[in-house]
Length: 332
Image (spheres, rainbow, N blue to C red):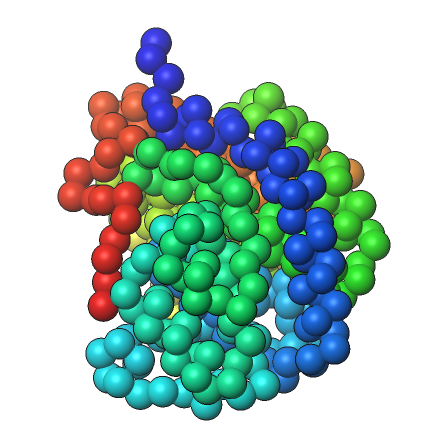
């Protein structure tokens, strides 16, 4: 059996993240010190696709750990509508694999002109975005050939965690990061969670999580669309009760992202309600109860990437090059 590029790249994540954390330690410590000194009033995150999904994870992490409000950019405001936002006293985090998308670059330039601190999380350190930014946190995922992002998304999340842990000086989170590559490898070696039997009959699917679980639900839904050609949508399990839950009567299938953190009780109550309504449920969970709770989403994603790749192949699809998609998307 031939191993796809997607599977090979996903399995590289533990090694790459171990290297990344070591290489970026001084960078993140220095940047964390600068941020404590400058005390940004809010954070503005710029990204598209999987990078935007990583930004949702960053929003939860920064707001929970630092208490600083975070919002997501609408790049078209600058590139299409030609409006420059007032971003003085803001930290602007630009997340991009290529660092070359015109609308992302336009937003970064406008942010600097407005007086913001601009930090780039970028995989290509020679890119225009890296040259433009005030500071660069390298993602360090190396070249990613498969169209569907895997190792680059995981490495983006680990870079975000390292930056925030140095900013807030969270020793527990820093110690958790040191063990992360080991736990990611455990997730690779663990049994599958997403199954062909669940996925192959699907035409529509909901992915539900709460908090950090919701953050990764967006990426899970995207990958189901990209590599399995399944219409999947992500929701906060709390938001799902505000209307969309009526769809359960149509024999709806739900992927439940179960995390062991402050959100567990509330999320499980909502999933129990979906079960009462006879939804078809499949649970994704962390393979280890010892990992730091802020890092558990990365373990879920690590296992999911391998599972969804295998299912895509079983369905007769090509997860390395989904029809109609390109690795680098140029948007204006």
